[in-house]
Length: 350
Image (cartoon, rainbow, N blue to C red):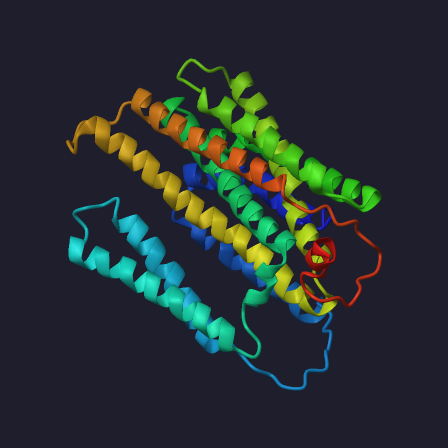
């Protein structure tokens, strides 16, 4: 998993710099157009070269109700969270309806997953403490990792006054250390067969990194910012393969597909929801200080908003650290045994 993450890591190194260059040279609209040729190249490689593994499936059942209700839950939740920051966009009654709709859709999703023959997210997986803790941990990790990249860029551009291309280049140390740490994390887990200590170290380093990033001001030197980025990159890289591997190791072979896809989606979900929540923190900081006026936002005020974001990110990492003390360190074997979910819990309770 660590080696598998190299491709994504390389893209995260090249992406911000290239994105900044395109924005400075052609305009931000081209950031979206550039994905078209890249997508064509990817499809031209996937179609002829991706191997097709045929599995014997007695009955093909698609969980349409689960897909619809989950999509409705996330869409309405994010819309409500976004519009709650912009009081003039929609009425309060419509905003309340979005929150109510999100709750109804979530209740429908739980019902659908309990009744589905092939659920999108099998709820019985959450009876396994390793899967549950790993899911929450990867959610928190995804939220804080994206925050470190987005709000470092905001700080560099809006507070330090750097151009998009220069600020993108400044993210290279963070992304580069993330790649190295992800590779080392996978190698350490494969050699030691354990992951709990690495999870604790990851969240501890991340908490320190977020705290250091929260201390950035207009007078913070570029060298200090790079050091803070490296610390944050190390913690993000260590966590990148860790919790997915832990969840995979704790379930039966038949559930590997559901566990892997769920863990990866939960990580992405953490990034999206975390960014929305932390964006709310930024807007609340600005609104409280500007008192809903049209006064120009000063760089010092933006620095305060970024400070609040990283303080909350540090708190989230402390929560993850405390949670990982309860993570069971199941020794990883070379062969996946067909065992029932939560059998480790049952054995320990006997």
